[in-house]
Length: 220
Ligand code: XBP
Ligand code: MG
Image (tube, rainbow, N blue to C red; front, top):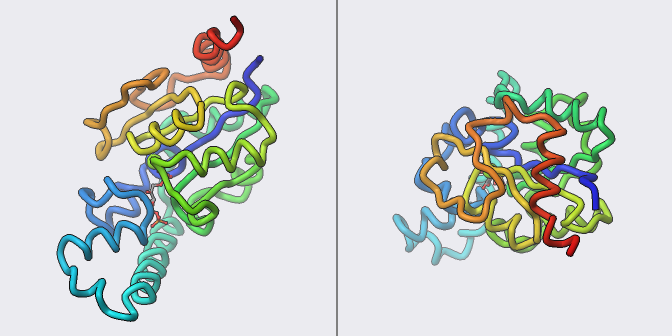
């Protein structure tokens, strides 16, 4: 089956938002846990477990996460640059007839804050945040996006930055290209199709070739 779609992770892949955005609201060590609300709960569990025993703990976590999101959206408004090669690849992929999708743990609001409307329009579907019950490394968000695209995993490639993202994509049956960030450089990327410094030297013909190799066994 030929390559028909690319599925992009957001934070760390489209832009180094963990360094330029989320980190300024959260601490790097917490990035091992995906999901802002889940990360706050994890921090409380480690450092203030008594807080979680309060009746209004969940409501206060939601409030804190909403405040953090406001800070992040404000940082996006100042402009968080996309990583090298991302915009060019998005445009080239669309011009080559590939469909684009987003599969992210962050909120839909954070995606539209990061990407200008013109780039958002390139995506056929956006799977984000609480769309699914289980966040990465669970495969749910990738499975949801595949269903929206009405495509089998074998017709797609996933592009990620972290071990949690790789686990999620592999569990959904997706061959995955990794472009690590400073926060994920030391992660275990076993099973990745390729690990690259960024997308700066990646063009569609190369992705088509890697896709053929990745799914060659499917053709037997
Ligand atoms: C990475 C995440 C997100 C962000 C923070 O998302 O785990 O939770 O760190 O965003 P991706 P929220 O799957 O794109 O790498 O606070 O909105 O969750
Ligand atoms: Mg990521």
